[in-house]
Image (tube, rainbow, N blue to C red; front, side):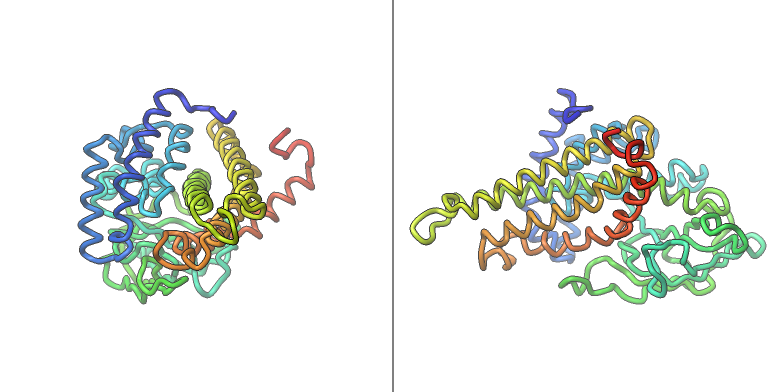
Length: 394
């Protein structure tokens, strides 16, 4: 199972991706983190390099301009892409989930206007799901509305953590269009260009040490968009969202593995070179425990994630498997980076290594794409109903 889909061709592609991330993207991280014109120019250079090397948008279907790498091989590539926070942007995989939504549910005109430039990396997407007034863990509580007036949708929404809205060409807004329908059939997805009158970026929300960044609070006040901006059918918002979130959670977990593996390498390098209290850190039992436990947790999370991907690749919704890796992977990511910081001592909490940034980013993992508590609850309920049949080992 651990080599499912990992053919010699995929291994070679994975190695090429590893060289690009390690030799091109990671050295550029100090500039990319500045979020200024120098960062933008570096991003453009990395995109051009990725395209020239045949590493651009590999997981996107060929028919929409991507590399056409199948789902399971791309899972392995994500492990490597995740070694850098900026890997997705550099190789064009950041838009993959939104491209899938448009590819599956978009009209010919929607694809022409947004999908083609999205895959090419000429524009960025954003998604409006979470609202500050209601619990994001329960999407049936969303209060945003879109009503049809003649040939236009009139959208009123207050969203936040609409990541990337400050640079996006459009936001896919999830809003109530069918108020009398059952809870999971009330919502639809409406594409709203960010330059539409009434679309306001209230602020970029300061988070975990970031005063800039991309987590935006937005407000849409009587925003009017043509009725053909509906993505999918009326009341199909949850279906559209799940098509985006399911594979996305697997890709997230594989990228977390890339981050954890990088932190593990930094921890080992520090332990084998730092001398204290009569010996190298690597010779001390407690540090050896950190190394051994981190290796075990990374490999356990990796095999669980690959198993979930294999199940989804085989046609299963893999709900139990995906929920398990979401909360288990988030915990693993935090713990491995935390140990790496501890081995580095005071250096670990400075910006002289990437660890403090990785640690802050890891904290988000337990919240986005469904908080860990919800995933644990979903798993427990399913297993309690059918402890044998619902278990991944069944």
